Image 1 (tube, chains in turn yellow, red, purple, green):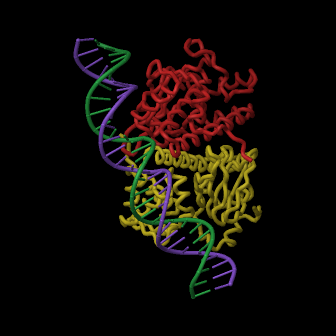
Image 2 (tube, chains in turn blue, cyan, orange, green):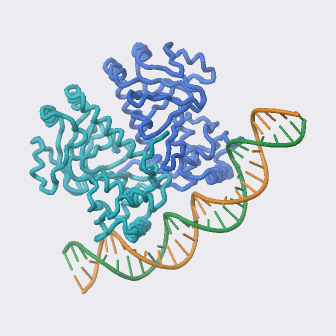
Image 3 (spheres, rainbow over the protein chains, first blue to last red):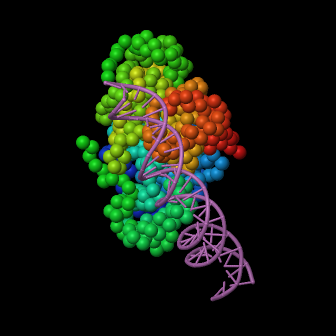
Length: 241
Length: 241
DNA sequence: CGAGTACTTGAGGCTGTTCAAGGACTGTGG
DNA sequence: CCACAGTCCTTGAACAGCCTCAAGTACTCG
């Protein structure tokens, strides 16, 4: 990994990384505060497949994927490595992270990671109280995401699982119609608790239903986002009485 | 809920609550520090079935079950409430908690809950640095537990799920042979993604295998903890090469 | 004793897995 | 350019595991 001190200079280095909106962690901050942050965070660049080394002792307190994507593998009871989760641009690494449970982070593509240890973050928060609020909101989102996965694994059918995964990827990529799956069928199955054959069959079913188009196995076009969401098995967020 | 200022006075009030070891959150603290903590935390008592009210705005930053047990229910896509998790004595409430995702905490029995908001906890940590370390360790344990549930729901068979739940309850109760299930078969099924019939059949299978005895449906005697653990499908924690 | 709740047990069917074969795409070397 | 190997994906058939539905049992409470 290449530690790069020149802050945010990477934008120029990654023509593929189109202008991203400011990460949610930094929403609502003044230009002056952003400048303060540039010096408090550490920006690292990873190439495709490169592992993200995390010192388990001084794990980054907050890690933010600026662009690219990370995969998180865990080792199961048989000692096999399997895909556990994905982290896309703009998203936070799980704080206290997966490392402790035998997890392993690696880059799926050219990826820029912004990290900050706890003491550094504490110092920043002292100057920029809003930062803590942003972090709390993101942590809530992570907990909600964990809960969604738990529901998926515990109670959803195969078709709902595959529809959910695609819908989530779709939403996390800003709702763009064209979706490039960063993992193969076997890994989709590992995340969703299905076999690769079942994943394949369910994707085929979605294609036949006209909800998606699949020009190439890893290229998904979402043709009907509403229908896709309807097939996830998640009710349209109802207000409790 | 009855806010009680008199610190730790509850011990006398709950003859049933046999002398608990000091909670992990307070491990290694001096008597003086414990005294400091008594004034920083708020101790509340709940009766069986009583909901734990959490102001979503100022949610307790850390909540610790001193004695008793809590259940956490969530509302699924169909709007049905179902049991999601249990919190036993000595354990932490999930920080940032379940409230945000429509969860609802309530007491399973006579329960004493120790809470502290973020600002109060920050103040305590300033005096007692060790407290933060303890909290971090507990949070790690929570993340590990989440991962175990995810593995259970995603990849385990019915028999492994039931064995795992019993083994976890057993371990969380200090390995005592006699285990009193605080929930019925249907709720065990809700947690593990099984039907109540399947839970019943698997418990029966464990009984017939001589691993447990079931004098009453909610009374489980663990006769062979090693065999029970072997049936969870979790490998005997191997050291990675 | 009757009602209610929780648990058990059985039969049958559906869903997803397993196993096996074949197809599509990519890169390599002649 | 083609042949070839390798990887990933698709598709089919048979099976197994868990669910659904339906009785029937055990315990508690009035």
